[in-house]
Image (cartoon, rainbow, N blue to C red; front, side):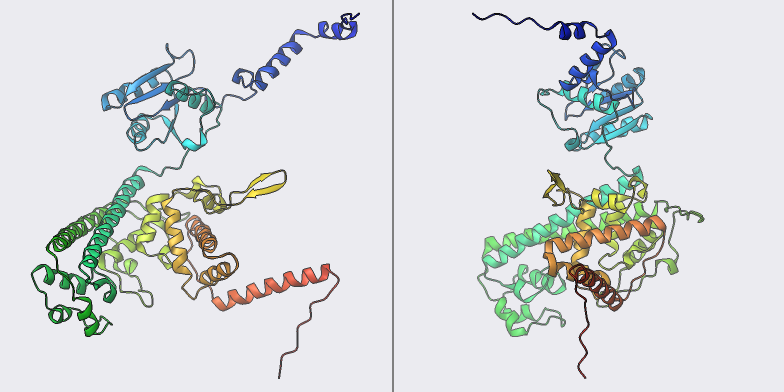
Length: 491
């Protein structure tokens, strides 16, 4: 016979003897363990916060409960509707707004909110990932509002407005250069189809010799000797080889492609020149970066002595526009970053348009390198490093530094020696990342401290590295009970 077991009086009495505050505390703990945010112990850091889910046609906005009925509204993407959105947020007493960086749809809304005096927190979508059960735009904006209220959203980096204007022009110029390169590939493909191997005897199809030969071909010239005679005297290939490369099957349809590709390339070159003028005008209007104890220099023409730049060994002398830009960049940044190996005027200009002049957004050089995606992203679980690969980021400043690292590896400098040493140890890809990180930390310190770059001696660097290796070997030998003895030099 099975009988039911009665609960002990001790357990029953202990449950009955619990006070009301204890029962409420246990209920809050159970709610918190189930994911109820009302049971969380987090404190409100931004009580006047709103969240916006940005879309191409409709923006969904959420404000705290009790500020408006309903607390979630939708607004269109037209300018008048954006103004209505801003006025509604102001009427609700909102002071700070969080929105995701969705494509380019957020830019107009961001500027409207910023002009209205609201604090705007631009959030990387990867840091506000979807959780199970949130499948609508309404719940997305409420989730952003809740996270921002508790201060759990980190703002993405966005420079000041003048730098953003420069960045737009600089990125547009990059797109024009890529389009021009695409038409050069079409040009080369059409020439190869006619068995004209001009790209094998000329380094650049769009150089002085290449354009002269192409124009003559489009005018109807077919004699290889006359075409080869148009090449510049600086071309190293012999005339006989150039003549052989210009002997082919001139087909009408391929020549039509060559003509249109050449016209498109020249049109894009004109647009790039116009874009360069707009960039130079925008750079000249930028204020310089103020340094402690230094009076700011007003924007304007650069003095000749400040704009003078010495051409590096083996490089072409800079053009007048490059000299002018170099002077403006030195005035704005306070230091001459083109003195660093691997960085030219265009690279420094791209860095300025991407990171600006205010480096106080990052705590230190390591945080700056991590934002660029050049630091190891260690994933540790169970005291084991599962992965240490760098994060996959689309950062144009990091791309410039990686290209500079490749150029640095060909120089006889301490940075070049560092690259070659890392390449021998880890391989080229990791050596490029390590050198790019070193360049990022160097640029951060120079801009933060306002000091010029002083290049060290490569032999001194090699001796210092040798001493470091010897100290490590002595330490390991002493740990095993041995001593490191230098061999006598042969007479």
